Length: 251
Image 1 (cartoon, rainbow, N blue to C red):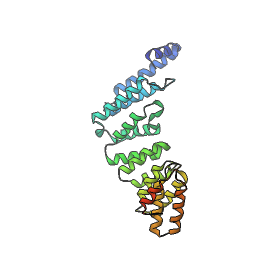
Image 2 (cartoon, helix red, strand yellow; image 1 turned 180 degrees about the vertical axis):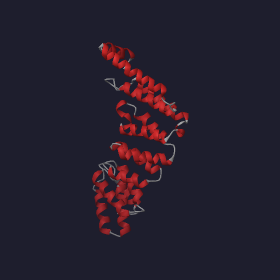
Image 3 (cartoon, rainbow, N blue to C red; image 1 turned 60 degrees about the vertical axis):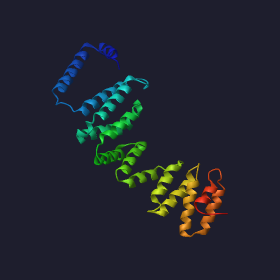
Image 4 (tube, rainbow, N blue to C red; image 1 turned 45 degrees about the horizontal axis):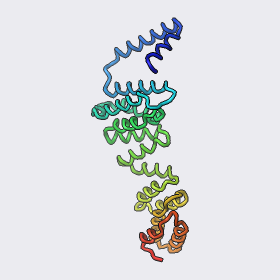
């Protein structure tokens, strides 16, 4: 909202409304003047909030100057190296706002908010606390960022648990889970591979390779033959030659 628009709204008020508003504004100014000095992060976040508020007045969020200003504020904060000196209580408050609002994606500032979230956490402990916040108050698709933090900072089981909850027709998570479980729980890896054969509508070669190797390990010739027949029936999705090469089988 521009200064001109604010004045137009003010002029539309009655005299008593103007007087009441001026009193409230003066109180706000007095409180702000007498408040303790703010840290660099407090000052920057207040300015970000102001710009987000301005964006909320637009009918369409498209290349508004406030978006650029928020980008600049975040970049300056991250480059300044002051965040490591900020109190966790303040960081946590800001992180909660960012996470609860899905990185303010609605206002086209997802990337700078995500960058700021990552920069606010300057120690492994803070990163894990951030991941906890994401899992506690974040929406479904935001949780993927918390899962990646868990994996990076020593809690991979939570990352792989997240992957299991989100399995769909995308092959990559299946392969990642199979690789994780193959040496610690081969049966679990096989279950995931079987699920991938049902859900993945594209490439399935690696799924068949693991399942046949699994059955070889168990010495189950009947299941091996069944899987090879199934692979041959899915030639559009399975590189049969690669399957045979990888598992050392020949027709």
